Image 1 (spheres, rainbow, N blue to C red):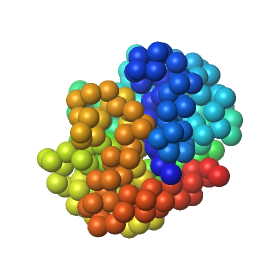
Image 2 (cartoon, rainbow, N blue to C red; image 1 turned 90 degrees about the horizontal axis):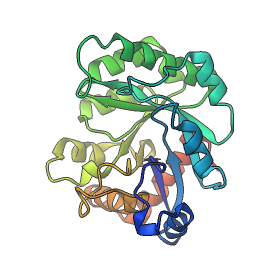
Image 3 (cartoon, rainbow, N blue to C red; image 1 turned 180 degrees about the horizontal axis):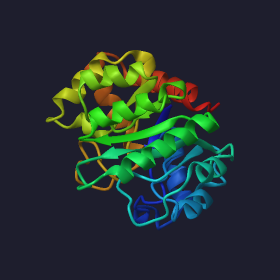
Length: 257
């Protein structure tokens, strides 16, 4: 029923499952979580992450280096293309710009972002975009690199309707995380009301950013239904309808059957 379009399964707290990933997956199935996209944030942890989910057909992967990672290996376009070849890899990222947690000369972030965009275009696999306090440069670089030919998703959307319209014009979907459930997230809630039905996704970004009523606790893909319920309320529709359209949107964007 539900698809979590962005989670970090290698980082979730498995203690409630006796540290058994298979137990977590059994629970996810019972909770009607049909598919998950497990997102890479660095290359050092990528092999172990890929091995963890290798036997699960209902988990897809991305490959990339998060804009705030500054100690690990920074891949070339060619390296990303090579890593993205397996069919289980459906996206490049997460990538983008983050001016909140990184300071000083951020040319290296711009360069890394451009590398990921070029790899996405070369592999024909969509981009997973992280942007925080960097919306003008995010749009500018996407335009300069011709990212609209491949598109992707602005994950964990935290901007306003004006930015959403710019992103959608470049062939990007808008993905809502648990933040949309926060009382303070009025601008994001406005976007959730206005975004066209065929251009939005839902996610958890687990283990981070748990939705209400779990805010401040470890997050899990199981909680994506709370994101769906919030969005359904904002759009005056049903949870089932939000689950249906976001699942269809996910499959169309990432080419997942």
